[in-house]
Length: 173
Image (cartoon, rainbow, N blue to C red):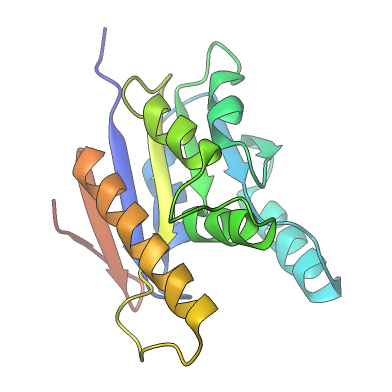
C-alpha cells in the first residue's frame, strides 16, 4: 500500500497556487476538491463559478467553509487525492465566526490531527501572507500571525512544500 503524501502549495495571491495544485492532482483518479470559500456576494459567486468551470467534472466537489476534519473523514472511500483550496480562506472563515481563541480552535486542532493519518493523498493550497507590508490594524496582524503559524505547522507535516511565484512552482521541501 502506497504511503499517503501531503503536499503544501503556497505563494502570493494569483501566483498560480491553485492551478499547480490541480496539475499535481491530475495524475490521480477519484479526485476530490474541498472548497473553503463561501459565496458572500456577487463577485465571490462569480469567482466560485469560474473555478468550478475550470475544474470541470473530473473532481467531486465538497464545499466546507469550517469543518475540514469532518470533510476529510467523510470522503468517498475510493478517493485517491483531495485538493483543499484554500487554508487561508478557511482561517478567514474561522476568524469571521469568532471561533479562534489565542490562535487556535477546535476546528484547527481536529484538522491538524487528521494530518497524522490522512485518508488519501492531500494537496493543500495556502497563501503566504507574511511577505507584504505589516498590516495597519490589530485584527489583520492577528490574522497574519495565525496564518503564518498554521502555514509553518502544515509545512512541517508536509512531505513536499512548493511555493509558486509568477506561475512558476518552486519546490522548497
